[in-house]
Length: 268
Image (cartoon, rainbow, N blue to C red):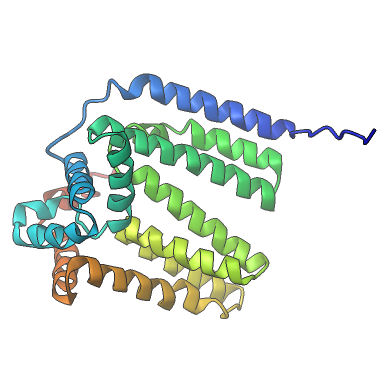
């Protein structure tokens, strides 16, 4: 008879699954008690996702026009966040349009974020380090809090860390698949939240520091071209994109929340 080989799972992986299960359970037990803010960011994300879920991708042009034309909306999330709106609209179309289901999407993103963080850390460093990192991330008060909200933070964390690990892996060993995958995932990270573009600064600095300029286009030009093209197609024209960017750049000067943020005194 042929020899039957036993498949052994490393203990660190089993412990990670336990950490993941405990964190998921703790959040799940309290997520139904969350009071959602319908008049704040959560209400806008639910509204965007519901509209796109009902009207399809063609509805983005309406979201852009309505946002640009209504100044009171400028204090709140903008529809440039096409990636998150699209993903959440699919999720809500399957599970139902509600704040609670949108919060469960945050929880799902958080769990995938933990899996990716553990996997790549174990792959490139050490399983014990990966387990320690997973514990710190899984029971981080702010991570757990955001995993209960109907917001994009958990999803943005997921794609940001995925982009960083793909960039790190690409530098370790370049392949065509890794190269394409990094560009696509990083582009989508920017589409999740426009501030994802700031990752390019750190990518470029890292490449310059290590005297590796072969990847500059993959962290700057290519993602920006992809994102810009999607913006133009979705927004219904260049004018809407420019109008949105102007609002984003100018709003901190008269946004009461932006003015108060970091205004002190020092102990705050």
